[in-house]
Length: 166
Image 1 (cartoon, rainbow, N blue to C red):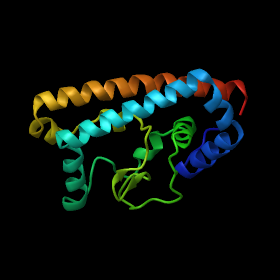
Image 2: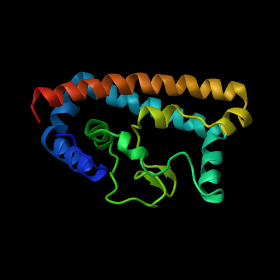
Image 3: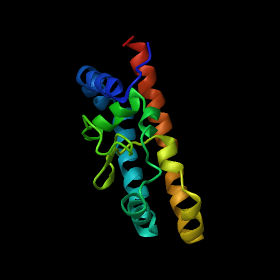
């Protein structure tokens, strides 16, 4: 049976982390991919700050009554994606910060390192029109590298979990 709520997914991810986190973390390939993913997330985050995207999203959320990170976006997250976040040292929140926002949206933006593809890739029309084209292209290139590795790692962990019949 598929978990229905984000809290159920978080519970499953924590259970998987407790049972298999160390085994997964000590796998040489997964360990290397986690390290590389962390670097790619950092690169994307830095470009998000430098390009002005992070500031624009923060202002939209605080001053204009909402952001693209609205309630329900968290439904896209799988237990395996949440497990990746736990292996990256992220703390999964027990409750949502705001009823109108994603479960993972916090005081300083998204609290996840490994984010759903939509969360990484989406840029609203306003951002596309206001951020310099060169900066957007650079950000999209970095986001593409992040998403590519996340897809590979997510798939590897999903196969591991299925193999263990968890």
